[in-house]
Every structure is written in structure tokens, then in C-alpha cells.
Length: 348
Ligand SMILES: NC(=O)c1ccc[n+]([C@@H]2O[C@H](COP(=O)([O-])OP(=O)(O)OC[C@H]3O[C@@H](n4cnc5c(N)ncnc54)[C@H](O)[C@@H]3O)[C@@H](O)[C@H]2O)c1
Image 1 (cartoon, rainbow, N blue to C red):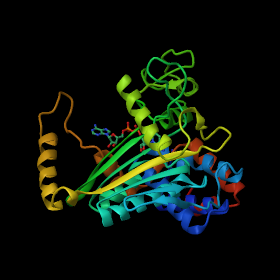
Image 2 (image 1 turned 45 degrees about the vertical axis):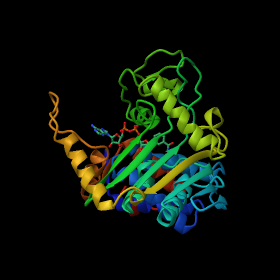
Image 3 (image 1 turned 90 degrees about the horizontal axis):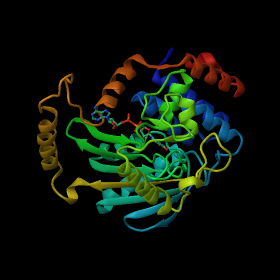
Image 4 (image 1 turned 60 degrees about the horizontal axis):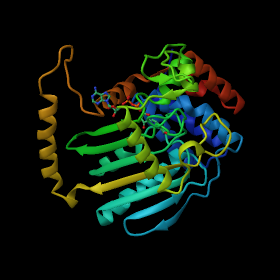
């Protein structure tokens, strides 16, 4: 493993994206949003994905000079055409717009089509929470799951993400894929030559497997059986069908040919629509203390709120940096050489 500090992670990503044609401002926004995942410990969605983004930008599968534009808008909603640019940029614009509308009208709902992979959903919903609003986001992804009773890969593990602000504390953030684990966890296990637990995936013959590569060829299992299938279907209706984006098996994976055409739906709403913010914070403090102070099950010292693990990881990693595997380091070194960027500059 190799340690790298988070400022270097962000700088490396910014420089690499600019080297393949992104404008400085867009590269910086994408770098901040990609490094967000490394910062909070969502390693499957951070710098690990940079080589494939760069590859796609170089070969034109992502547009490095997108004409991102709002194509439909009213007081509380708007639709963004991402023009196949980096998802981390268009998703930022979509959440900023939802927040602005919520500031003015109490609620903002935006959709995005012609988007791409946005990384960790929490990055965007936390923007709403930082403004004292509740944020929601869903996005769709290349198919990895079969509907209950089916065998074909037809549904992405479309994440569901909520962020709820708290008084003087980090927000409560639930950011989950609809598969038992995100596909990135299989990729990470594969890159480290590790097995995966039984129950994460089936191979292409429909048999349970501990081999991440066989799982990646087969299907991921949804959370909670038909309930997870139902949730992921609904998220594809919001992020794909409603937004005008691609959906289901029409979304290629990042390592496949073709434009992904990914979509998103984002919502920001003001708590003051319902009650005074301070009153909400009082009630939320009371509610969360009922949860975290409750009796622990054997083997558990703490009950966590969603988002706490990531919040604690962020505090640690901002001090200590993050660890990347030797194989990822080598991949990044090769990528930087190819882009004619100096490896030493980033502490690799
Ligand atoms: N962009 C995409 O297409 C895409 C697709 C799938 C997943 N993702 C991202 O992948 C990331 C990981 O998803 P995942 O489903 O593997 O995450 P996960 O299974 O690690 O769950 C993460 C969530 O569960 C909470 N959590 C974990 N343990 C907890 C505990 N003991 N008590 C309370 N809460 C707890 C975390 O705070 C977090 O909100 C997310 O950021 C998601 O947005 C993105």
C-alpha cells in the first residue's frame, strides 16, 4: 500500500483532467468531487476510477468540452443536458440549481440527462445539508442486477442518497447502492486479489460465488430481495425515464463502448417549509439520541447514524492521507507518464 495526502489526490486529478482537455474550472470541480470519495473512505468511487475516466475522455467516449445547458425550467424544477461531459461536473450544477430554487421557492428538483458517472452520491446531497436543507439524489448506472425472478442484467445498483442537516454536527447521510455492495467493491477486491463474501453476487450461471471476477461477469444481488429490486426500479424511473436519460440495459458500463447517457434526479428542500430550523434541530437531536443511546446488541459498543463512519474517516484522512494499493499506484504512474505529467509532484 502507498500513502498519498488528499491535497495531492485532488491536484493529481485536476492536472490529469486538464491534460485531456477539461477547462480549469471544470477540472477543479470534478477533482474536488472525485477526491471527496477518497476523503470519506468511499475508495471504490474516488481516484481508483480516474484511469477509466481519463481513457474515456481521451478516446471521446466522454466529452472533454461539453456544452452543458439547461433545456427546460420553471420556478421549482429544471432539466440539465450534460452533453456527455464529466458527471461530477454536471451533477454539481444540477444540485447547485436545486439548492438555488429551494432557497427562492422552498423546493428545487432538477434532473440531468446525457450525464456520466457521478462518483459518491453523498458529495452532492451534502451540499444541500450544508445550506440547512434536506438533500436527495438518485442516479442510474450500467446494469448489474436482474429483476426478481429474472436472469438478465437489466438494472443498475442505482444509489439512493439522503443528507439531513444537524446543528453543529456533520449531517446524517445515507448513501447506498441497491445491491448488497456496489460493483466497485468487487473491482477493489479483484484489484487486491481478494475473495468476496458469499451472498454479494451470482456468477453468470446464476450460482453464488466468492470470486469477484466471476461476480462481475454475473449479477449483483439486490438488498432485501424483491424490495431492493423494487427500489432500484423506482430509482431508474426517476433518474432515467423521467430525466430523459438512458435506462436499464441501454447504459453501457465504463469499460464498454458507447456513451453511457446516465441520468440523475436531485431534490433540495427547505426545512422551514415545515417548521423553524432550530425546532427541527431540537427534534432531530432528541430523535437521534433515542437511537444512539439505545441498548446495544452483544458485540456492539456503539450504534452509528448513517454518515458517521464517513465523517470520522474524513477527519482521520485529512490528517493522515489515504492508502492506495500498489496496483492502483502503478496504474496512476502509467497514466501520468502517458499524460506527460510528473509523478513526483503528487507524492506517488
Ligand atoms: N455513481 C454511481 O453510479 C454509483 C452506483 C452505485 C454506488 N455508488 C456509490 O457507492 C458508494 C457506496 O455504496 P454502498 O452501497 O456500497 O455503501 P455501503 O454499503 O458502504 O453503505 C454506506 C452507507 O451506509 C451507512 N452505514 C454503514 N454502516 C453503518 C452502520 N453500522 N450504521 C449506520 N449506517 C451505516 C454509511 O454511513 C453510508 O451512508 C455510495 O457513495 C454510492 O453513492 C455510486
